[in-house]
Structures are given as C-alpha cells and as structure tokens.
View 1: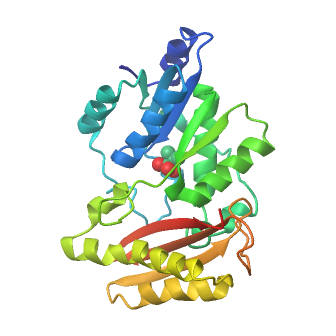
View 2 (view 1 turned 90 degrees about the horizontal axis):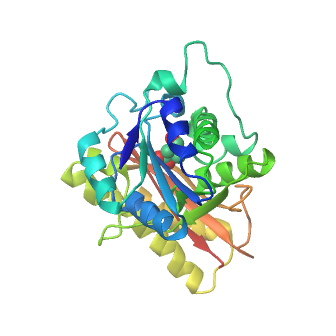
Length: 279
Ligand code: PAF
C-alpha cells in the first residue's frame, strides 16, 4: 500500500492509474468493521482502491471532540494493508486547508436538518472536505455508510447539484452482535455507557415492531422509539425523526421509503443510529 501525504503525491500516484475504475473510501480513521465493509465493497466494485484518513477540523463544532478524536494510525494502516488497499491518502491539516482558506461548500436546506440542527456547521465541513477529496482523488465510485444517513443525503445532493462525476455507493450499517451500530465514538464509552447505548438500536427495533403491526402514522412510530430512549436514565435524546431519506423533511405517514433516525447523548458521547421503513 502506497501512502501519500500531499495533494501533489496523491495526484502523481493517480496519474499512473489510467483506465481503471477508482473506488474511494473517505474516513477519519479509528477504523472498525463498518469502515472495512466499505473498503471490501470498494475492492469488489472497483479496480483501484484509495482510502483517506483525515480528521476534518471544519466538521467539528467549537465544543466537540476534535482534540480527543481517536487517531490509532499504525493500527489503521495495518487493517488497510490487510484489506489490500492500493493507496492511502493522509494529508496534514495545512494540505487540506492552506492558511487563509475561506471557501466552503454548503448544501442549503439539508445542512440544517437532523444532525445539522444541533451541529450547525457540521455538514458544511463535511461537504467542503468531501468535495475537496473528490477533486483530488477523482474517484469513479465513493463509498459511505448508511449509519450517517443525513451525511449521505447531503453528499448525494452536493454531487447532483455540482455535477460531480462520481457514483455514491451506500453500504449497510454494521452492528456489534448485541445491536450497537459500529462507530469510532463507541471507543469513548465506559462499560456502563456502552450498555446504555444499546437503547438506540433497541428503540429502532421497537419502531420496526410497531410498524410491522400495521402502524403508519409517523408521530406514533417516533413516540414509540422516543419512549425507549427516555426510559434510559443515562441517555439524553437529541432528536428522533421520521423523514424523507433524500430531502430529510419530516413525513406524516409512512407511504414509501422513510428514514427513522435517532441521535442521543450517552454521557458526553453523541451517538446516532437509524433504520429505513417502507422498503
Ligand atoms: O463519515 C466520516 O467519517 C466523515 O464525515 C467523512 C465523510 C470522512 C468526511 O470527513
């Protein structure tokens, strides 16, 4: 696996890859089976796989976990080597944001929904860095996890609106055997918090079971999910919503594919999870 640390190195590495389908997996490192499932999908669907590791400062709010975000770089490299990744792009912050950088990509409307409500600059940071990475890597396919469903909607819309020549491939949520959605932030949880965190997936199972019994009113389904989180003393709800997966607008009835998404704080850690009904 070749490691590139500058944009110039990355572009030079890609010049040698003519006529092959490039698959790209952007990450912030602290890799787990969820990321590796994206890498495996990229390996299957493309001829040359690029992974980036970049803890992107612009998607963290002022009081968020940028400084303590886990950075187990050697371990990540070992995992990516084992998966047969061709090129790893690990730019330092000054490469991605040269001094005086003031240009951002904002996906209006979507960026203020779901996670964007409590993390107001988050999706602007995500859209900016992903568009920069797409410019640098110029992938044919880019792989994202369904766990970050709102991020997927923002990126899809950005790609469509800006005519970016890349196909977005979305891979299913990978869960621990007890249902917890895999996340780099799970590393922050104490044993007690980890058990509290199971309330998120349990609440979504509850929503699905009410849906399977025939309920189609979004408010009733959301209330069933909220109840599970609110019954857990160590969890604090951020949002529980049933929305259109593309526009992220709330729906009243489940009449087609509907994203049911939850975010909650467990201790100081903010976790998200979701399920899609009506497919
Ligand atoms: O999902 C993530 O890990 C990040 O938001 C991404 C897409 C790598 C952009 O920094």
